[in-house]
Length: 236
Image (cartoon, rainbow, N blue to C red; front, side, top):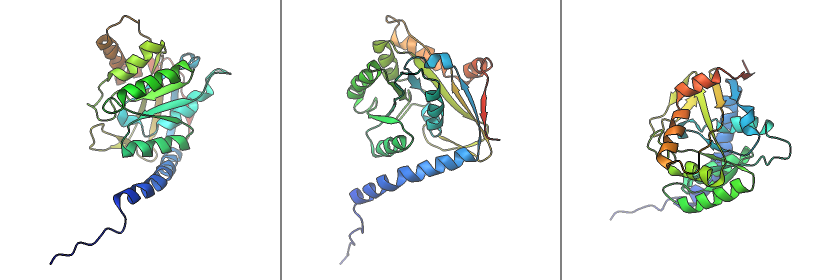
């Protein structure tokens, strides 16, 4: 007769423990990485005089909180400085939400695959209140460097410009995940880019708007536009 031992912790209990521990552990690791790397910020400050929809690739989100700390410094006095990061309704999305709160960021649950309509409505309300949104156009499941309709729709419906954001590493590890998640190596240089905001005409076809945003998020475009900005250098 076969005897099956009951697990010491149920799946639900394990998830509760992980939710308590993982966000603080990741927060510590990110700060250690930050302290062991050099940082250059290229920021178009004029684009921060009003709220924005920050668009970034999913594979570059790891060090994202550190650029938002810099962006808030350039927002006008009296301007709402809350930034809401959109994350999935899956379990890992809840970990991300708790991690964002540790960095002083707010969270909105939903994605193009689940809860899409609700998060779009909530995002429009956030933007109309004067706060800003951070969203990964190719998240949460890809395809890699694709543009979903969500960030374009919320920008067009509220007339709030999209702020293209890239985080580039001089040396990094790349995971074999769909988003090719990048982890900076110690003593490397991290370049944070937040360049001129992108606005769309209300009657512009959404596919054309997606193409324009994809072009603005390309590394070639960022290299060209970065040349006009003076870097703020931290560390190293």
